[in-house]
Length: 274
Image 1 (cartoon, one colour):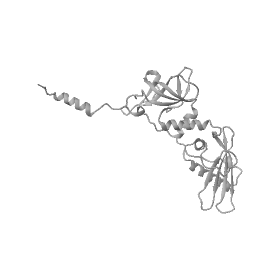
Image 2 (cartoon, helix red, strand yellow):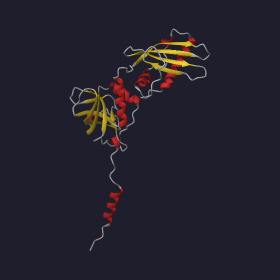
Image 3 (cartoon, rainbow, N blue to C red):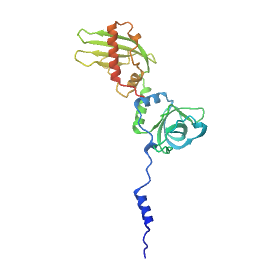
Image 4 (cartoon, rainbow, N blue to C red):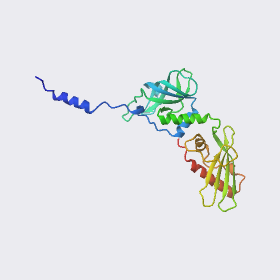
């Protein structure tokens, strides 16, 4: 004779069926949202960019983690290298420290198996990396990797735009028609290569501006594409006000016009969000 299954056993079976084990969070619950500016800041500062997969993460306690803010944990991470994106050779396994916010329940994050992009430099210890910033362990999403590779490729191109270090001078010339004018602004760069901005005004038209990687502006000059290296150099390198020294040789009226045209450029570029 078949005996009835006890009610408590049925309850356990139903509960196990209705409430399966929670699936691990993608990328250990880490944010995958990185702006172009943030990635460019880190990529251009990192001697090594490595694609890896976390093999082990151990919370660091005691004096070695005394400076970690509440709600965060310092991890000693070992990761298996999958690809060297830039830099010199690295061993098959690397280690590094990273501070991460605890999960929504205040617990340590489970990072084993998470694919990451590491933007780092080497240390005196073989195989040990030092991240270039607190968010330089970047989740390896297709978008993040594609943007990083594009930034690094653009940075080593023969025509890579240099860093902007200042503004040398500005000129403003009124046109023959009321409301017609042109302003040219010449920039100082890290490699002394000239970069110039031009702003054209025509009656009954919105002002147009362009950038040229020389002191000569031709018909092909245009604003930079958003989220490009040239855009980044300008948006994050230009000073907010036009320096007084750049318009020192202009009349008060022309200087004010040049300042207004410079604001057209800054507005067109948009903010450098870090």
